[in-house]
Length: 139
Ligand SMILES: [Zn+2]
Image 1 (cartoon, rainbow, N blue to C red):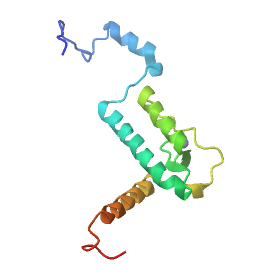
Image 2: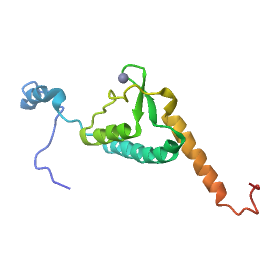
Image 3: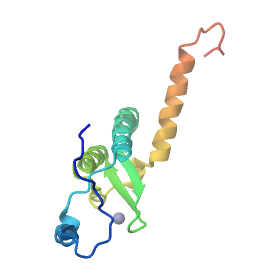
Image 4: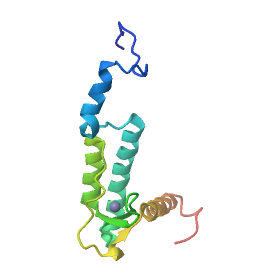
């Protein structure tokens, strides 16, 4: 922990505050780092993505379809594209949602919700498989 020698008061509202002009100059070009919880969310998405890809790509699924918050249309993302977008979000703090896959076949893309349900189902099946067969239902 660093000890502050001077009090910091960024919200004093003083129009003569020299910092006020600096904010206008930096504008939108400034990197906007993710908060710690946002970073954590992205990291969880990345690890979920690994699981979904491992489970779903053998069944022919090429990626996920995501409803875009900006244009309210579904965008299709290959696994690699999704991973790239999430990593980009981690490093820059900005999403790159408008680089969807080129000419996608919607049949090969599923939603996060579907992928999550699929992964949960596989997990349950594996959990049942580890039980003593004498106690569980016969296969
Ligand atoms: Zn969009």
